Image (tube, rainbow, N blue to C red; front, side):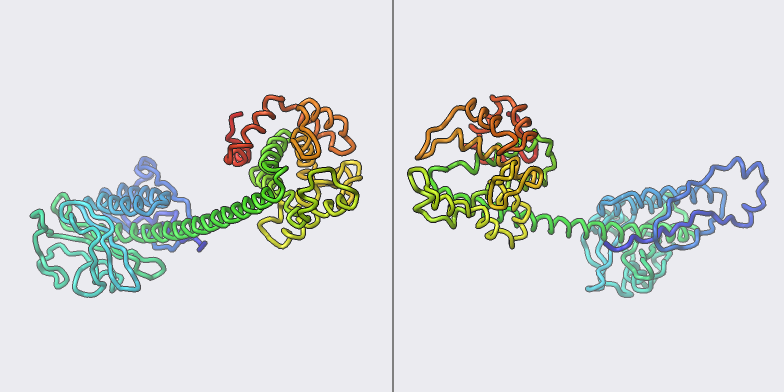
Length: 447
């Protein structure tokens, strides 16, 4: 993002000669000016403003500067700039226009008062045929206290009958580049716009121009960020659809384990939270790994995958290749990289007797240790062609018995802390609720 610009109002006030002659008592009695926090911006000397109300007007200018620098919404900022300009010089209304450098035009963005009604959205060329066009073209302010004597203004009645008599128009400039104009119309008192009015409005316009530039930069970066986020979200949805398509393909090949991926995904997410994992990004990784854990079985022969009875040793040897097959399928896809620990290591055992790498204890990634527990738990409670489903209590007994051998004891203890009723609700909902995993990831779930 581009560096913010610098506040045009300095932190010190230079008094004029009459103010230097004030007595100590009068100086002590006058109000203290508010110091404006500086940001890297362009600078202009504070205007020397005379008259009895000069200090009040400078204080008002400081307040305006401070308020403009705190606004980060463009429409609100433009309205505040125009309102502040009219208030500072006590004008009846006015307008703010922004420049389009490519087309060399000005567009009425904000208007106020009867004289400017109906102008919003209209376009004026940057040339010498109008006061705003001339100010933008030359980059200098213009004060007209009798518009009938100006070659740049053709006096005419507004559609509502209002006739402009006096105006003050100043450019909005950033590092010498004109980005728009602010024009105020007719003082409420009927008096002329004077040199002090022009100096104050010019000082405020410098701050306004910088504030507009910063907000535009901020909004451009925000929109860019939103576009990138939307693109990433779309990519994630595409990958998620790919994951579901792959697991669906596996379900059609291995009817005996239909629904297994959905159940173990939900169970793994709930157990991960019981273990103490609450980071949504890490939970999404577990979700992805759980859904893809058996993806390598796509490379297993149908005669083995669909065999209605127990496998012999040679067939088991072939079946045990599926974690490594799944790893090789996914390892070069960046989006699936974080899911690889579960895909590759979910058949490792805590005592080192598992496959494919024979990892032991905490050398096995925690995500894979978590998944190993729920994978076995669901397999025990599920019907297979070669075995009957067993009860919840029998599944728990197996987890406890194999704790420290097949399973990480700490993960088994975390599993036991979750009530039976909650595990059964997770299993039941996983069988028919596609949103369950997302709710478990975000924590927005009432079981």
